[in-house]
Image (cartoon, rainbow, N blue to C red):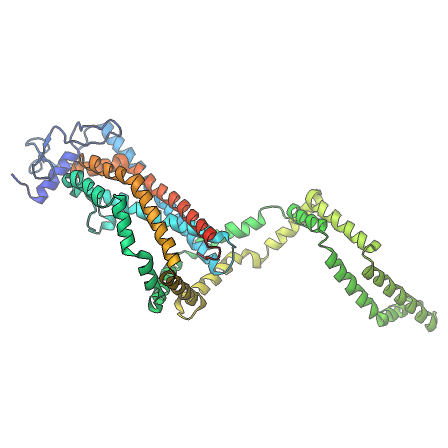
Length: 491
């Protein structure tokens, strides 16, 4: 007799906790009905045998465990599953934070070329993490509770998936020739190029990008970003000793004779000052000489000092091997050596560092930097005429024009798509189809869905983690190859 949806659900719940389930021998997952259940013959949940886990009368035994050991085992696995879900989500959050930081650094024109590589890796990592999250979740339930078609597959499609889905995927999707033909006939690069070349569409991309950017910035806690800036920049400047690295840099500059221009500048300034020091010397001599000294003696003495001073500074200025210059070089060399090896000098440098890093301007640098950057980014995102928005629009439109107008570039993009699709389908298509046909045929609706998630869900979270890691590596490789093939490409 066919059951109502409510009674079928209750029967499934009774089945899910019945004693002595059949185990797989690998994970212990229950893949067959318990001895106390029989199939209902309609593809729905199994019906409980009367008198055993009765769903229509008597006490509710849906949550009754088969044994105390089984209850404890399930409890531990639930904890492990929750823990791994948190870990996998943390990978996604980490990739997101890195990506946003790289976007912020790039928007300021700082960081150098490495920012693009890290940004490409974190961006691809986010895509891989989100894609694998959806794939794992859709096996057991509707992602985010939304009734998206073809989700909650184990519960809803246990009878059909095993036989038809595997054959359908293998025949219609996993044939290399079929997939490549569809990709080529779609003319993806040309259509995308034409769409992007339209000024209205390019402006739309810029507008949507600004919306996403604003949402991302608004979603960040100022305290968290400031802490990251403080830990990654300010603390890294303050933690190491300053003396040895400064001494090494100074020693390298001296070895390359980089101090010579500075000494030339100082010698020139000293000589210029000496030339204009006549009145100063007259005043000093008149002030410091005895009161009984005649004026002409003071004038002669001041004149003599003036001539000697001018001649002395002239020699320093014009003679690269002058003793004063050599003494200055020896002083700098000794100073560089002391910064690296003299404990007293290193300690003095550390005291100076502590004074500098303790200044209010430095301690508040993280907060001031982030607040200024945030304000600049949000203002640029909101203003359609800002440099940021205009650059995004221009770059999108230029890329679209190149795709639409350059056959060679389209062929390259189409070639990348074809090779990637052919490789994926040829190497992994049959495995995917076999996995679908062999596994889904053994599913047992509600019980299988719950048990499989409990037994294998923890390991499935590694798919999300691997998706983040592999996606990051793939994004990094693609970005590097793109720079190699197109040196002027900005990413």
